[in-house]
Length: 187
Image (tube, rainbow, N blue to C red):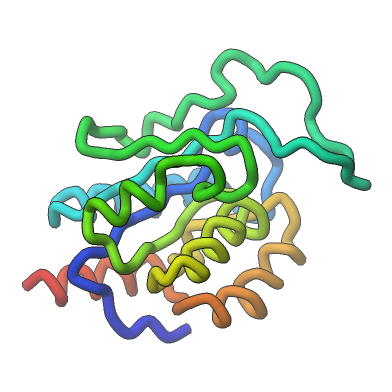
């Protein structure tokens, strides 16, 4: 893990920390992921940096071999968990695909804010987080992953993303690494 720097205008992207997703069985306790993500969100807000809260309210059409949810979600499925402490300054993105950039205003919002780097956290590592990171990288944003603030429904998929995919898309570190860089760069 080698986190080197945070750009002057870095945004935090919190992926799918919503009631319906955090209730699913995961490789790591979601309570820890939520706590770490919330601490990052608080720190970004304190430093006047953008916080983007992403939830998912559907899925891309098309056939797949693996079964997907079909039908309606429970009423509270898309509600963000209260621990992320949504603030009026936060930007909400509701996605209907794996990645938060597809058919949303995320790129336009980040560009308008002058953002050059994103820090990603959330669930699921190999799906929402990785898909969003791939697009961020392709769009020219510097990408950082707080790997202890994410988990997946499948441990092998989580490990593959962190060990093999993320180092090709950006830099990885812990929540504390990001917090330390944030404090150091804003001192």
